[in-house]
Image 1: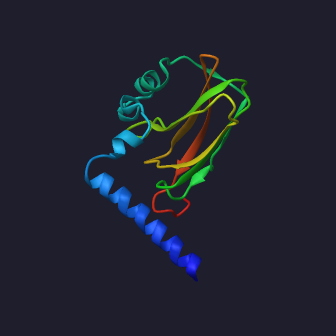
Image 2 (image 1 turned 60 degrees about the horizontal axis):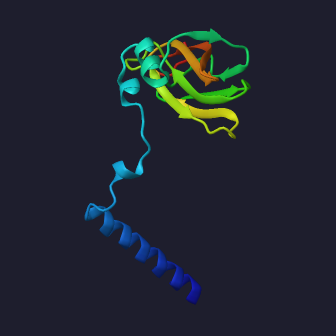
Image 3 (image 1 turned 90 degrees about the vertical axis):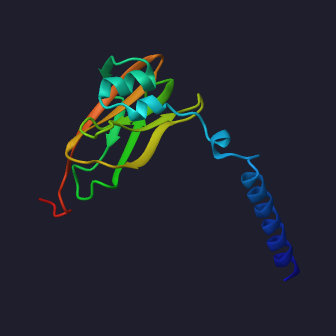
Length: 156
């Protein structure tokens, strides 16, 4: 029982110190968060998003990218997407949905020792291709799959 009390007091003191630092402006969320390509996520078309996120728009189709997405998404608010790249030297993986108001749905920068694999959920406003773009060796590779979004989740 004594160790539980100590643990509780230690956690409470830490939480209190962090709260004081945040309220005093010593620790701000902007300073803690990583940089992100704001222009890429605000772009209204695929080419602008690709240029802002990856510096190029030249895509090469690749069979070394496995894009897993449902054929039919009954709820466009939560569409599971998994991208696996076996391209050597994969630097980043981005997911674009051309028919969304802002096509860039996700972008992941990978370290050199990281496996080329990401899994996330995206929001889709309507039926569209889902495009996975992999940057490796300074070149862009892509794979795409059409995902049909049903209205009201009725499956029709």
